[in-house]
Image 1 (cartoon, helix red, strand yellow):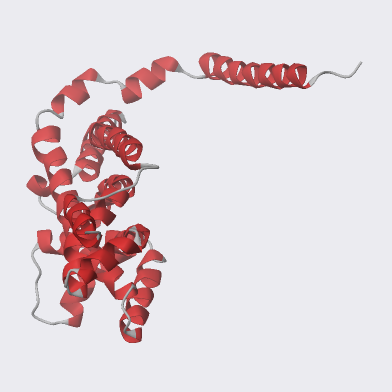
Image 2 (cartoon, helix red, strand yellow):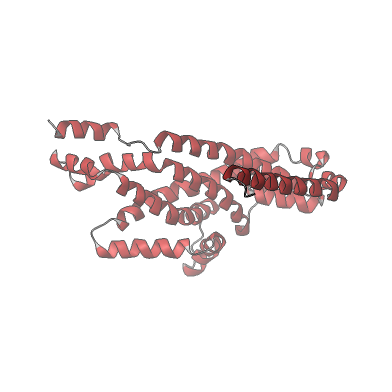
Length: 277
């Protein structure tokens, strides 16, 4: 007798639960929990990492991320506007930049900025924070530019037409009407980009640094070499989660607030009202 659709769904779901239970039991009985505890949960090693893991490594990670995101956001806005420009050369340059840097690994960009600029311009020695800001900014800007462009194009054209009917120049309409509305639309994906940039900040360890400039990955790596325990890796990972999990919740919250709603700014609303009088 053939099974009904509901019965097939129950059988498939039961099989999935059975497979999951089998994997859990295999891991529970096959793993050496004593060795795992000694390798990852050494309380003495973990306590020796504090407070420096917070006051130095975590703070530096936040600083590097903020510098890169701020620079990348400004550069991303410029690139997005160039992509939407009526000047063909601007569109070509912005498109080439975006495709080029989106296609390269972040590590190569960081190494190129840290080592390539002094070689290309003899006598030029960038401050480490400036190098990190430029490198992470370039990594993030190529992605943020496309997100910002999509947000600008999602703003209803009627808003721009209303602003232009009141005598606003195209530049003023873009700055005061379009961009504020676009940012409300793209806040969730920008938050996701901030999470990615937080993790990419771990690559700055290849630029070299003093102990007071360590970020979480380099701090964990140094402690790992000294202690010969994997506990520093776990502690560094937890610190990353302290940053990224709240940002993930923020992204979902913003997505709920903006998703499926008509986005408008106070300035745009006033313009629309005036234009319809």
